[in-house]
Image 1 (tube, rainbow, N blue to C red):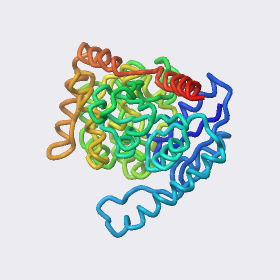
Image 2: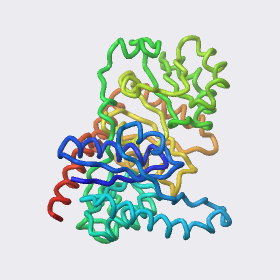
Image 3: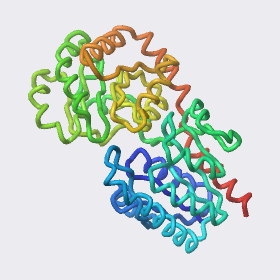
Image 4: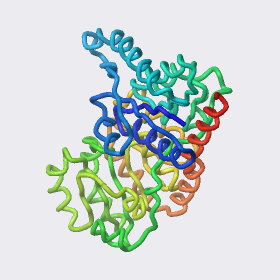
Length: 365
């Protein structure tokens, strides 16, 4: 079987594609080709995994910058031509897109050539590319049941979940605490703002961290993001050994394992991981996320009692502190939130999507 994968620009689009690729490899003899862009994250990650990599010209729209978008129609046309050439040369049985603008020309080209096509959407509110491709693709894999309202042809929809990394599932051990220099018998709050960190979340935590560790008799595992790590060292030192403050977390499995409560952004990947693990969480949606994706993700779980959500804005630090303290003091509520979060977790997502792609492509032959 020959399979084209596409998607990228960010890890949120790239890593689900790689998880699906790995499962396809496990389930069937196959030859893979990844098509991305030169500037996306995929250009630096995919070649190192031994997957052949090709690029097309397309890039994302620049929001609010009319002049910068004048060449976008030309990029779309040229990229579609490039994708048609790559698909015709590779002769795929299936093509899978996981979002990002690069998915449009590749999946469109594969469909034009009669190939079985599938798209996978990570967010509750599907992106423009997924909504466009949903009219053409043979299958649309969703992460949330509620996302189906954005599509007319319900017969193509599958609520398969968002593929997550199995290495996020690790047991809570003393070794995990030692890894971060933390104490096993303290209430542990894990805070992170995505791979690059979050300025507003860091500023709020700097203000409320002393009260949090004092009133919970706890400790904080705090991933600041590389950009803000140095400037936050004084705040960390003021916590007198009650915090592990790192620029990033390379071992998310151990970080989740020691966490009694997670405070983080509500990107699709983080939401899927937390749901898979059944961790109680306070989501702080990034207000600048395209089309309000992060708030939509968090709102689904919050409405079901499977998470709490705190929006940025006036009084943000105080509202966040109150929410954390409330959950820290109520173990039964935390356990209830975790159980309800598990209902949204789909650890078999990558396996399910891969199996359906293989079956769909086989039926097309």
